[in-house]
Image (cartoon, rainbow, N blue to C red):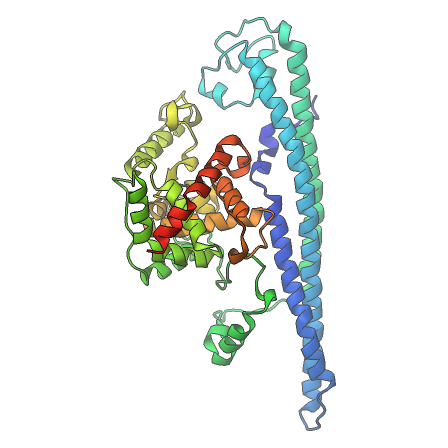
Length: 464
């Protein structure tokens, strides 16, 4: 029994996304292919340029060194790509074990529910395996249920079976992921060792490409090469340093810079559109921002407009603020305990990080991810900035478009260019927007069909 694993130990798998890991593997492979492609002209320059002077030997030596350097870098990126791809495949297996464990755990929860009701905050937060471990003990020391002297003998065998099955599934999930992660990290370390180490010391980093006009010209010329970015992805936006503790992330700063050159956005904080005519007017008023956001994310503008049509008729912004405040109070030690945020009544139930904001509803957690913050370690200041950005209609459109791009990267049509997306892919992306990992469920599929039904209206508003 000691070898069993609890869900809490492997819950991080919920946030692991094999498709995005594989997409990163594709990006490393793209860089490898770019470097390999440069070897041919470099080889011509080295071996087929014949001239003699005092500097010719130096020239040949430098070219030879450069080619060797590029080969080593290419090999490093190839190794990194292979390591990530193998990890992505193992992650799929680990998540399958985790999903099986959750199914057994949910069955256990239903069985436990026939014998008692959780009444304390600790009980509500406990996972079913822990609840059963307490119930089958001689005393309910954790006070999980209203009636701790209840007779559980009639469910004991089945509950034990489900408990052990869930624990074994979670153990397999953890072991599969850890073994694959260890191998991947080792491979990435080997790849890193193949890369040269450039030391600038205290010299400030200089963006040479932006500073030298001929290099900018070369970059524009090369932008048509399919190797400059992954097929189906957004254009490259340049280097963005890690956000860390910075209150304004580079991604958010880029969004604000672009918005500064666009017309102001129409707000709907107090009175969201309630009719088709109102929705069309909102999209028409914000069409330049919608088009800019779509281009920034590598998406069709009508895809973003169609999602806006679906979302902007939701509840007023002030109700989002009220929901967020109540959830935060319930989550605080001094708040509405013993009621946890997830157990609040009606639409109030849910984690504070799952509260949606803005005309195109986006959860705090998703908004943070799009903007480059770590949602698990947001500072209060960062969370406030994410919330304010989601409530600003212009920034909200850009963030929603960025989230759609993330969802597209997770799909089977990640490499399909925006202009080549099919109606079925439009509808699937809408379902993914609504349902997340549960996009194949009935509600998300209905949302996708509603999106398709209203898409022509959204396009018409965008073309006004």
